[in-house]
Image (cartoon, rainbow, N blue to C red; front, side, top):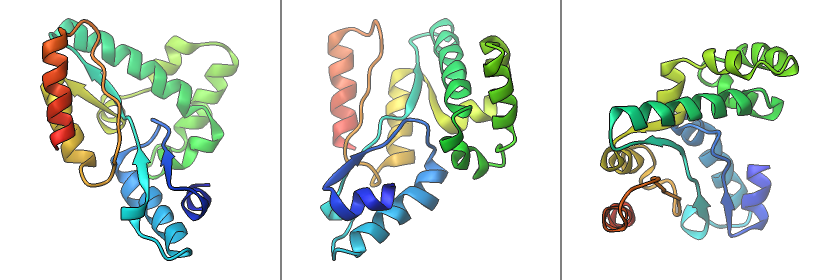
Length: 168
């Protein structure tokens, strides 16, 4: 689907259930292949990707955000179309467990299967400024548009972070 999007569109909005590794090894090459078929390059294509983030102003807020992300990864992880993202990291078999638990409506148990390594791979965790820095590090030069939101952050601090994100 990614290759087809690059073949016919000017850009694409990516699903947040992705990782830097998957983007570099699968998504970007597929986009380049699709663009190449019509004589275009990545410069001609706008990629929008808002990674999962778990920001917080203190440890308690970060832990609450991580808990939310853990559940989100577990939920998306039981979608069969997303298995390749898990597989590229060696976690493909996790999907079978998640699907079985999901059928029994055991969402808490699903979330418990999501390790800290998975959280760090799928999401960016930390204070808001760290999240922005890590977004630049992981995805700078790869994506053209993104989203960023931190609940409860004063407007002036959010504006400064958004400006920093744009400048990257």
